[in-house]
Length: 197
Image (tube, rainbow, N blue to C red; front, side, top):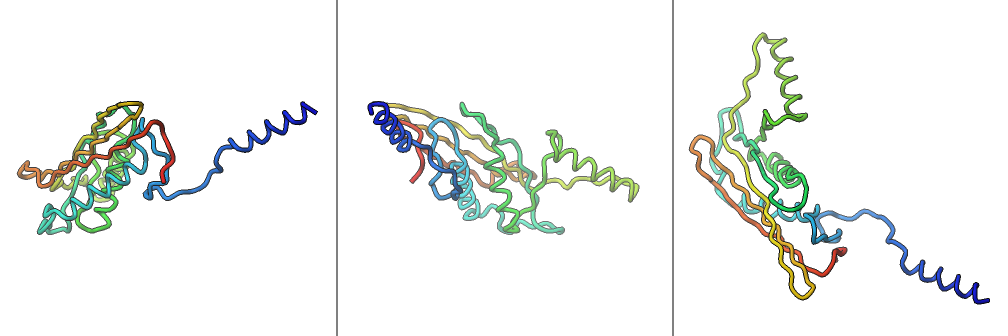
């Protein structure tokens, strides 16, 4: 009888502590896992949204046109100066997709950093040279986008706080002047990682 009661008690405890069933969530609605130790997908989404709002509200691209269409933006370095290992293209890609769709700019892929973009560009230039007898010259960008992601941590009375500072600059190539700069901070606080609201 004791074994039966013990088994029933263990089963009921196991049922109470069973893991949550997997399911889909919307990445931008704050319901994802909030980690104090890393930048999460919702942090990138929030930072990109705030940066884009600032950029769209700025006069950076007002009157910026080329004879062949919208101005060209090249993404420079966005460095990760935090203790976490992540790819900064998670922020940049969200922004360039929105900017390209808006028609405000065309995005040029940086050549010379290696990777699939360089290979694809090199193959396209070879194909064009084979057909036309001359190699394509890449268009020079009108603007470059660069930046940095920083981290600041604090703790008191068992509560941890992690702040991630997103800094971006848009520079006009011909003048070297910054035509837009923004800094947005995302701060998370708690005693442990949790699931958002």
